[in-house]
Length: 247
Image (cartoon, rainbow, N blue to C red; front, side, top):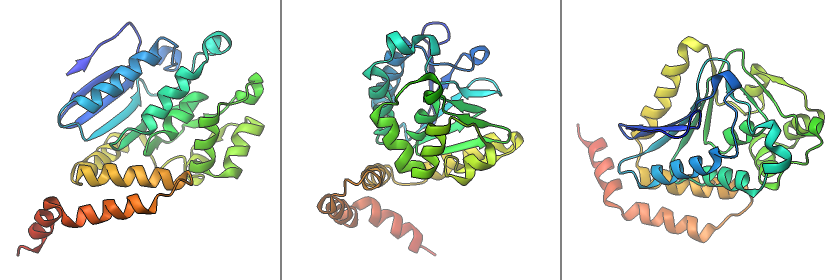
């Protein structure tokens, strides 16, 4: 099923355990408008309540740009904490999120991609963070994600020089998990989807939470040990191990 919104706003479709969120303004580099923020939040809510959804796929329309981020003309008057709250919500979703970068990513779209668990890009793409050229001091959540996901040196290059990075450097700094030719793009994305669907969803959700917390320096060993112990007692573990033991 596909959930439609106002013209050009992001669309959500759900099929076979996979929710696909798509930016729909290819002629405008799939920019994100202020009015898109509540739409995106509603899509995230739908993903959480829809039975059987195991993975969220985020992508853009067309073959040029994944997204150019927040609409430039709205930055001064309409860039408030709604954007950061939307991104924090995406980052904290308790299921794996794959960002299928069908093209280049600019500005806030880079941070949106960093909120996802996996990023798959195509040859010829690039990334560019223009905040310093605009005179914009970036919001705290974005700075945190850049440093924890990419490292301090890469974050400084992106933010303090506003230089564009090409596809190979996007892979080298860890922004991309995979860099593929466009002909292999869909198959690579689907390979990630298939692998995730074969995993136990409760354990995946738990480990995603603790991995992100650990990356941010918020290590709760007691909670992690409790989750480990619970999984050892689970019927799911017994069933899966039993199936592996069968000749």
